[in-house]
Length: 169
Image (cartoon, rainbow, N blue to C red):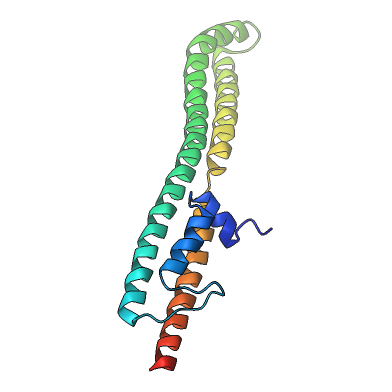
């Protein structure tokens, strides 16, 4: 079964499929998907109400996806911050030690330069890992897909309703 089929989407957003079918039949939709005898005003009103319900369900799905992506962003941001802290602590503790130790075998300025380059490279590496994790945060893909499907459904339904109403007039 297609993961984005109507039944799956209805299940995912928390609607009972049997109630949905019964509700549609009660609202003038025939079992074969056609429309019963109703006025255009009634059809438009029902269409708008169904659209509102669908929009609420889409917002709920978007909120759920955004929470998940926010957790990923927080983890990536935490790694970037951790990289900064490690950079700072490393600079404080190791700079003095390494500069003094290397000053025994090379000039003081050369030992300070070497230690600085090593610390910058380590900090850049940690920050790059954190930035890579931040790039893994995505837009709410499922919500975007279902909104496209819902838009197509709405267009098809309105065209069908209009054509049937003009055909009966």
